[in-house]
Image (cartoon, rainbow, N blue to C red):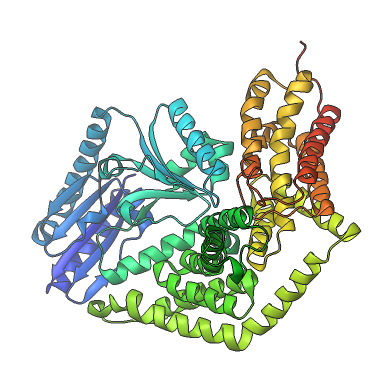
Length: 576
């Protein structure tokens, strides 16, 4: 049984177009084939073809004249005929369609037979998961005998960018990302959307699933159809509030890093009072103004703006950023910014779905109507409903965290540390990291210090254990220990993932034990970190980390505990 699709262009001959459709449907059913038929006439479009129908089709029959929107069918064998020919001998037309299908199959077989895959990988921080996913896809494709080109959208921007020719020649587009990816350039291609974890864990399985389940992206459509298709595609890509939040965090991080480093340098040059008016005109004072009064001011608006962008695409950026700035001005900080981002995103998306304009006026929506309406609703809700209670909550949280001492500080450090090691870059890890990073805007720096030392410990711990207790690790794991150490020093927790994946029930508890102790020690000594990334490479910067000696002790002790627990929990796997 073959699967066909057909498009009938009737123009003013709508009745004849419907007769053609019915004749084709009956003939296909009698021959044991399946066919989906779209009729286009001056009366509109009847039974529009779905993306799934197009993907399943083996050939397309184009009947009649007018705009049949053939751009939707790249690579499909096509048979072009007339309304008269179908009405005269529908069986002959169907037979010619079967011939077109066979010719298409022969042409495909005459090709080199190699599947061509283009892919994009991206994660919230744009560092480890981005490149590990890219490596997973590349290695899996090579093992399967396919050609793969992977573009990474990391913290330093896009690398190995896909060319238009590569995209055009690809059989499939694979998106392995935990953040929002612009899919506009893949119109007319089969696209499959996934997170980074499947690419890292089992690239072969991900490619097989992508080849089987990919759906058609975009196509040559009217503006209204394009908007609707884009919304449907984004809905399929999202995995809920977590993904929207991580998109916001990923765009916020550069502001936090730049601002934190500049503040630290200002203190290094001008002392702890570098921001006083008495230092005005000095380099230290100017660096503090750039870092604290500019970069940090943009943290919350960037967070809110790109949460809204993840939900509502570009029309959500302005309402989100403006709502985030309103939240910051009201004292609601990063909590208010998160709420503003979600309000702006969902409100703007709702307006986009609800407001219907003539297609000639659709261009006004993204640049005028949606930003204005989204901004008004978001701003008023923040001022009159959300801002004050959230500002009170943040003030209470800030004072509580600043006043933490003794057992309460230890408990918080244990919690942050355990969360950082639990899934090494997954939702739990990112929740602890986002919480700690967001508090930087409120000048609460101790959770950030605990998060970073706890994030460095897992990879360093497994690297040390693979050297000290070699019998507990395979040859490949011992070889990977050196790379894990480098990743751990750079605060890339994901360096421990290969070890945890091979023996999760023994390795993960050991990682959590070391990280929890490291976080607790960091909180106990009162270490503060003003930069949300960088690992040991930011420690030499004066005032980037306070209580530096105690912080280093936390790192060393956490690493040793991880290694020792691994010695106890892991079984010997090799005889040396």
